Image (spheres, rainbow, N blue to C red):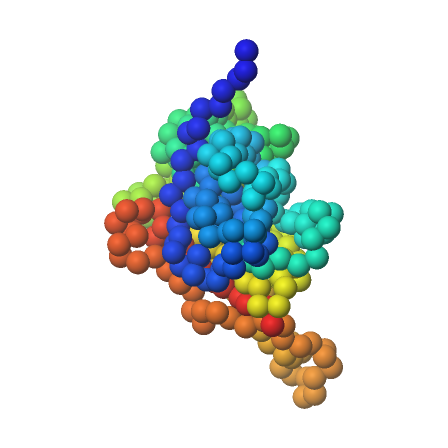
Length: 315
């Protein structure tokens, strides 16, 4: 009997119209969605293509299985790839494609991943300590929380979560795991809450920064992001555009710095009186400042509140 897949990978595309306008879609162009998710952005790009193609990347099997079904009516206009978007340059080149007309990255965690307790992304639901975007990966949140040495946990919480109370939280984690393994997100939230000073507690969950830090570590979200974006810009043809949505300052800083380098002629140290780098700008910023959600979008989708969109066009 043929197995059916429940199409439950929901996705409310963030800054949708701004992304579509920013990509300046040509009906016969080749476009890449590096973060397919629930297909909200991809579906709208496909609607604007006639003879063009969309290549859609995701490393989450749930996203691919569900969204393939959702977008099947577009036929061979769309090519699905199970891979991290950081492999985009190599995969596109292996396809025999030299240049593309546009690239989109939505670096946020999907609503489905957050709202599915068993995926372990959310501090709001009790589930297994997982947090893997690619469930074929061996590294999960349980491994990080229960086996990483104290110094490494501290570094993750400081660097990836910018958590001021990292020491208190890590000490509590070490103390608890010496008694028994920490098995669920609910248990981890309780540990974080017990470590937090009462005077520092606010309306939001005190677990947010720690969960972000562990998730970034599990999925290697920041590792190699700068070099991957550079390679994506190299993939763009003349007047091609790359649009990237970020959701926290760590990602946004990387995108901002890469874009700045690509739109600047000389990148020598300011102390050097004469340029020796011979670097030439090969792009320009479509939007000088990041685009953020409108009041109307925030009313519909609160998760868009921290979203920032940056767009670069290739010269």
